Length: 176
Image 1 (cartoon, rainbow, N blue to C red):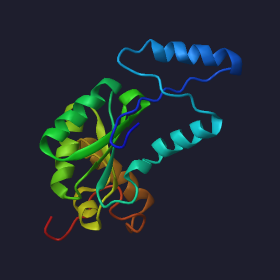
Image 2 (cartoon, rainbow, N blue to C red; image 1 turned 90 degrees about the vertical axis):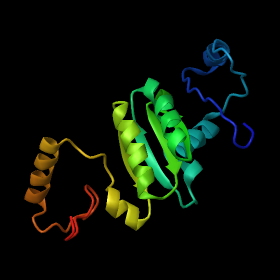
Image 3 (spheres, rainbow, N blue to C red; image 1 turned 135 degrees about the vertical axis):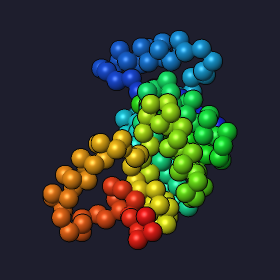
């Protein structure tokens, strides 16, 4: 695709000679799409590794989020988030996994988590500045009862709090 353009990649696997016509038939049945190419095994492995690694967002300073939603909710989440903050996204798992990059500000995290939760999903902060990570924590906040249970379990295994401080929850300061 051209820079900034969208592509749709379908992974169809099977036995060699029977797959070529089948793959083109499936792709040709999708309205509005133009079939571009089939990838060989090495190209396929590189493409899916690039997607799994969110490589499109490597090398910049934006926050990176991993949104897990019902597949049909992925585009709605990205659209809603995009109305409030500037964000760039790509989809995996038929839209159920969204990789999203946005400005590295705590306010961005509130928007991302708010819309994701409202659509029945959860958002995990993958990359952010230390200040934002400390303010937001990596994971979507849990309901109060589940959060209390999680903290007790972690405290049982790590009573001194030395294992990954700030990884599961924002670091608590004297102010709160």
